[in-house]
Amino acid sequence: MFITLVDAEFYRRVMDIIATCRRYLATGDSFRTIANSFRFGVSTVSKIVPDVVTAIWDCLVEEFIAVAVPTMEEWRSIAERFDERWNFPLCCGAVDGKHVVLKAPANSGSQYFNYKGTFSLVD
Image (cartoon, rainbow, N blue to C red; front, side, top):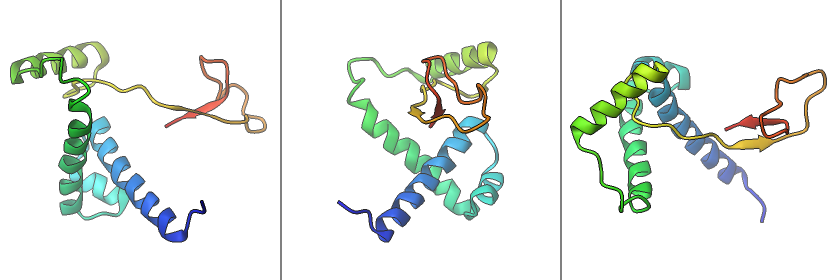
């Protein structure tokens, strides 16, 4: 199957939308700062973030339905512990990245070397 230019453009836009949400969740920057970074309007970013977070929740909630959904007070407690331990305010969890194995670039030394014993980038 060949990837067409339309497919590539769609993929790029989806990745920009996900990256926008990830930036907000990781940094807590203002919507205006994030909008400027991704060349989106502030109102677009204010729609992207809740839409992506809701989509992630909807996709994962069934997988963890056996686990009780925390109450608001439990979420606050989790966020406080994350802030105390890792200095990430308003964070309620973490997701490990995906290592994309690659051939080490010339003269990169150990820059791309990971704990798994390969060279990679984390996505």
